[in-house]
Length: 230
Image (cartoon, rainbow, N blue to C red; front, side):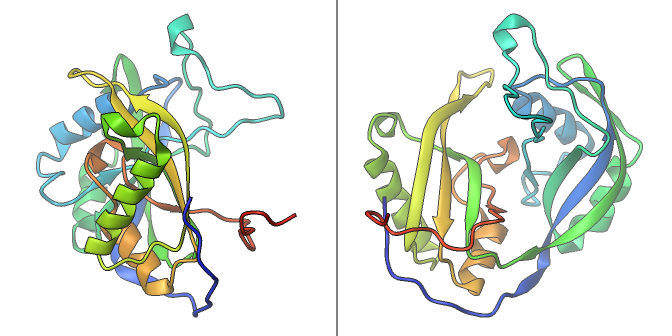
């Protein structure tokens, strides 16, 4: 865990990069869908990685207390609702082209059909607390989160982003044909507006086409308590 004192700056927005949120029709999805989703999108957008297009994990919120994530080993799937969206983070100058190419397309996600509708472009906003569900982890970082945080701080420093408050979650993995991709979730708090936008625009680490290193606003947090606070 890394922690420094707070500072406050006015929020900003970015017109350079947007999140394209597509409406979608889909009865069910594989729980671990990031690799097949990325592969299906790449067939329609062959320049996806060259154009720095990042693929968000399709998030299915629990509908009630006690909701548990489906277990793929039991043949269970995610069940999207009408409000579920498939979201890509796209440079603004590619947004219209990407939206037009994908609207009306039906993707095969490991045998599950996903039909995309209209996209809504959402500008990035400089929230001071950001969260990534997946950031790629090295083998020796699985049992030592401090090694992971140290490497993250070094990578962020190379992007001219000062890491001041950071917490990482438990390790997880993303299935790929070459074996599992090990990841950790990561929260970074007390970012300046400019650093927040830079981190969202650039991402952190590799495999952003597989949902890694993509930061989202962590809403509802007024202040992150300092270690040792009651």
